[in-house]
Image 1: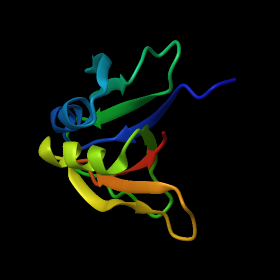
Image 2: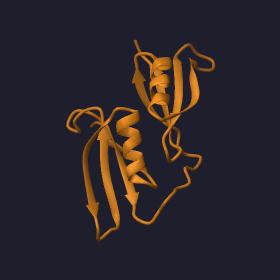
Image 3: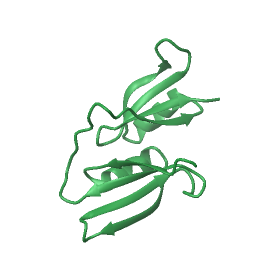
Length: 127
């Protein structure tokens, strides 16, 4: 078994696709409208779905926003330099909500950014 994808519901698909592709550097792998169900699915990631886990962005037509809730945590991405990644994300219009630094009670260097819907993405520095 392996993880295939994680699904996030998004209020504005074009805005979310711009964030994940232009700000975080993912690739749009596929997108399909389902008119009878009134929703669109878009899959983004850093590699082909056959080899990599990806994100499924689900846009239910007519729904502009969702409550994130208290059960959701975050998506984690490995980066070579968390501070440099924050600077690049900020330059591309992304929102950094926790600057790069050591995690509480540990030594890992982490940072957090937020997507347009308020979902948190953790950047974990890995050399």
